[in-house]
Length: 362
Image 1 (cartoon, rainbow, N blue to C red):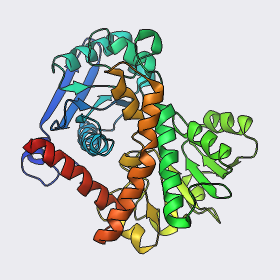
Image 2: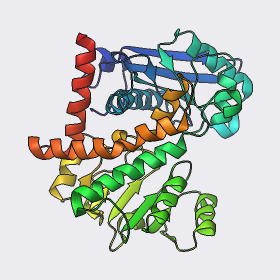
Image 3: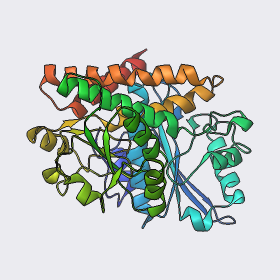
Image 4: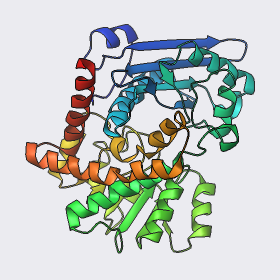
């Protein structure tokens, strides 16, 4: 899965560069509400594109487009590895949601999504919530991540965290021969929507947990509920924590880079954040340092499994059973990586690309 960074010319990126290959990019604007959005459809070979809507104050429009391209590509691979009959898509709304998010803006956004006629199914992401999807659904029938009162499954963070926990268990099985985090020290960077549920799983499993988050209230919510959890000053301090067994990036992407990998003390990286590898090649740096990387889009697929199920009449137990299979999928990737002599990220890409290619030929 190739990352896209710096998009001075979106047309050149789409049609000529190695990072291209997206089927469709839609630029949306509604000046009356202040809406500026990008919808990116990467691959629909397996079915309609499915992916969330990110609401974020990007520094430039080019940065927003780059994020939409990265995230939509990631969703193609995530949905393929999750065994879903969906392709990859993602949308980003440009702006600070705390300042410009309004009901009128979300309704306008819903109309743009609806104009695609079902080629893109949206859901929550960073900066958007269940209540927002309830509003979007009023103008767009292809909306998931809605509240139970409005026919949805509710907060997808629950199963996202559960899936990441299954990935951690698989990593422990592969590395230490036992599928448990009991007695292991796990560092969680970002304890917001997903991270705090992950901490609950880890505590229940007997792990020692260290957390950090830029939001003090998020950290306080954790420490009030679990006084035994310790707090690192920031991510830089967390990754250098002595005796750390597992590092779980659960905030924004790019957590694994030349600036962080050399200082990681953990033997395993397994977290909920999307696009954790800052660029292609970082996975080789992890291998050289003997760090086992559980591919992000594999282990964090619990949320998309949940929202996809809404389209068929949501059943939590059915979704949890599917998310439990992330354990087996992660082990399969580690085995493929060992057999092919490649990093786990490359092994996951090969498996996902094979499924998409087979669907295209069918």
